[in-house]
Length: 264
Image (tube, rainbow, N blue to C red):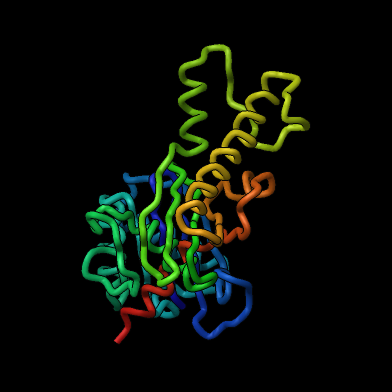
């Protein structure tokens, strides 16, 4: 079994892949199970070992004997260090970590390739594997990332905007009369209450931003594939006019591909 770990600033997603399985669709082919956790930089390597053991136990996988590899991307250096320590102490293999020097198979055309986040690169690799190019990946996370892949499979660049939850936290923190609301599509675009007005501005407003950015990418590239991923992709995708595919496990699939490309 291959353990994949995507550490984001807000949430951490773990996936367990069976290399022998062909069940599933898209990025979920071979995915035995997955778990979404809050990101906590205070967790030690030993705490991570207990946590991962417990999660694997839920699907009958033995932490000590059934894992054959691990692939990691992290935007939080402290957590990455703790995960390395956990694997070094409790497991018999070296993890594959998306970082400079690792074989990814994707040329990066950023002015400084080292600035590209590991999760963005994993998403781009997975999207190109599934849909070819040119492709735009929209990742709904702490920030809304737009990653653009050329027809030849190159990471061209993209855009970064504030994420939905970050924007709402700022709004509620600055506006004394507004309170947190459930993130769901309202009855109408024209809200009939403060709650519905916030929901409308959030859902339709961010969908309009996504569609506007994607169309601008299309003006430069021509016909493009558009793939959405991230925790809130399910909220915006149904009302977006440009998102064609939703892949909740895109980053995990990219981690799997990078792991495979680094095996001798």
